[in-house]
Image (cartoon, rainbow, N blue to C red; front, side, top):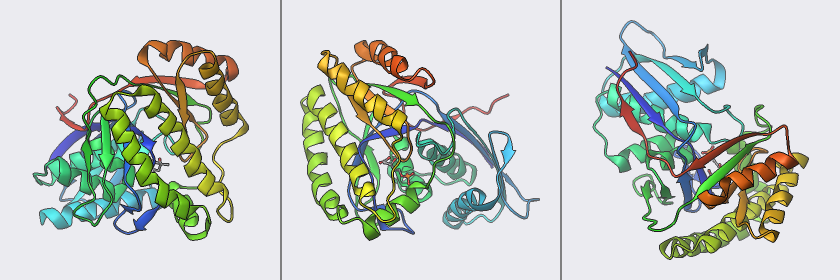
Length: 324
Ligand code: PMV
């Protein structure tokens, strides 16, 4: 009747961009990500027969409006699957700024899925939990697992994430938080606008499965350079589809572009670093763990106002003992 779970954010190396089914959050293409070992979300779900509506608290503040509805709709799915009808009190703490393209919806819905499933008495395996988390936020399907994770396209039954073996590949991710404010346009709205209006979207849908195959090949061979090049290329392609949408969607700011330049300069200096960006202005730089401190120092020089998070591969979602 009460459970607490923790999940970490993940950053896609091959992006999810575009829904084949908006209601079910089925992606047009497969994607692949790295679950980080930093900035988890911790969520407690407690059933309470005395409540006549769900109560959702995020970072100590009661949620209302659309963000609250999104959680309530998600709990409706869990209630339908469990046969229970009680409402719940949800208490969630994000250790990264919410809504700034830092994957807080991924860690958030992964933690909510695990805590809600346990609280409502559902016994789900990793696949089922991934499919459930997907309904909250597509990228949350990947935060169920640790390390490198692949999320399959397909119908409701087939579209789950699973871990990918990556022997010998040691990755670090330096996250530059250049703006912690709310994003200008939600990822769902931006995706739907892109698929509906961008003449470049067809090229994305056709080429991303190929880049995903190349990425899996690069991972199997622990080819760090190929992993990095594919990561940077796929991100630029995703943002190009948005630039061509109408009205255009443009997440990178001048500060973002300065960090993309700095990443290219690092490579020119012999430090292998590759940038990727999501639905916000922050820049995430993939590098070898031994280079992470130098990468962060260079980015900090270019943007002294940025905050940094230096992460490596982290674990998947876990139920945790109730805080005392
Ligand atoms: O999970 P959503 O609906 O917030 O979409 C995330 C989309 C990107 O972060 C831009 C790409 C990805 O694959 O995570």
